[in-house]
Image (cartoon, rainbow, N blue to C red; front, top):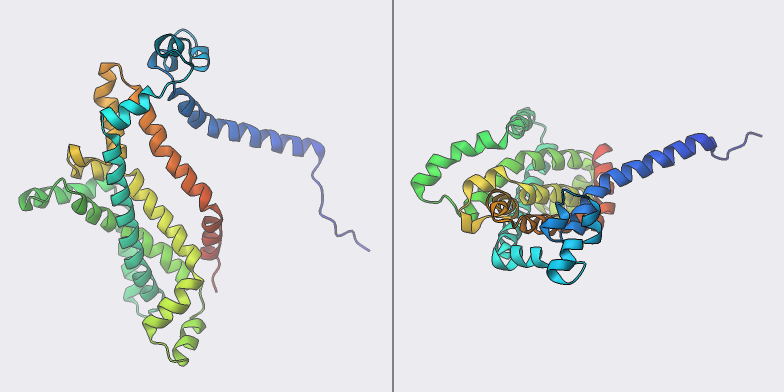
Length: 294
């Protein structure tokens, strides 16, 4: 009788695999951990030219603040330079872009997936071409009419542009997820008395919820991390976090307060880390569901 137990890897290969994973993990996590650590130091320690060990021990930090750690960078960024306004603007932009993109994307993706017409294919091709274009080339076309209509620099205007840029992606993602759901579910629901929209809302959406979460997360990241669109279409007082960090690096560094930028980078990165950590199971199940055709 054949042995059905799984084959164990040789000891040398297992050691090599674990060693590679350990090196990869350290290389991936070190920049973020180092930045978080350095954000609680003064500039003379974190950017010391004498020894990197100063950033670990915090010699100048102790001399200037009386302790090994300081929150001066966060105070300067969030309070003195009002980084909290940029955080609020980012929250408004990302939630709006995600909600609008998912609403339009679910309905459009469902319609294209269930349509037997030839034009559905060409709509998807056009969306793919639009998605492949650099964002900066798309934004330039909006500037002149926005200036003429006096709507440049406001959050709703930027939200509309980001939705337009993100919509082809959501259409393609959700279209592929809808294709993985058998049409029999729609037909069974309509036989039981549901309209097409009721079948879509009460039967199809609950089934593909992991795909909606996965697509929503990527839409959230687009609005959260965008620099080109938000930096060109928003006024100084309406900036989101990423352009605001860029302004720190461009102007505050000359004043010797680059730690404001370091604290702002950590403040902008930690929420993303927690978000992905919280939704990791839904992301994996959503991507897996999209790869399987029913």
